[in-house]
Length: 281
Figure 1 (tube, rainbow, N blue to C red):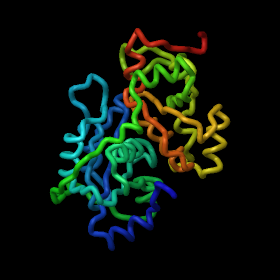
Figure 2: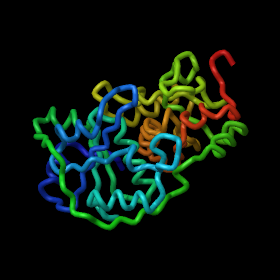
Figure 3: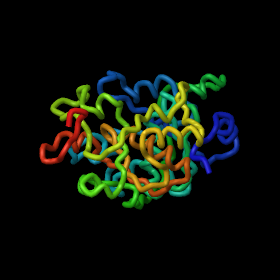
Figure 4: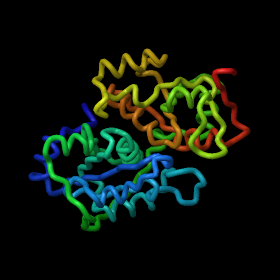
């Protein structure tokens, strides 16, 4: 089973499936200085709704884009015209970046039929398909979310895994940030990683075109980093976005028991009571 859909298959389904929901899940790092909603309005796949990762979040949390409660998520999904049985296709403007976070969010909320467009918006336009500007209007639906707690890891879960080495912690950040030799993009954040964590930079799982590597290459990449696919693991990153790419890669390998640390380094790195390691530790 794959969690991806090809550009050709999506174009065909646009013509044949009236219940299909397409979501533009583009999100940019704060340091990028880019507005994903404005970019969506400038050009998106026809019929696509914009899924705001920052907007559909726990606004009471000091941490960025934490998952909201079931009611909040359900209201947001309903406003986008999504029903519990809707087939969903998510893409982003990079190829594969933040779309994985949207995919993971719907999986956490119990949605079964959600796929990612292979190659994202760049692949769509490269194939000669049209884009559309402006806002799309969705028919309001009724969505009921059911949080799958087994897909989420909290601070205490990660601390236990780190302390007892009971579960692998896979960190998707670049090697320099993992090592603590490069500063974090968020002010006031400590540098380093959770003790015992393994660095699997998310880009190492992707091709130069921004597509997920094939299964053999994925296995080789994880093993080269020191993790054996199939072993229990928690994925983490800076703020819970690229950690979803690691979860997606392992799902492609048939591993469905991966937990994602939603708070990620934004939470861990800002808490002086939590232990860290650096290359000098």
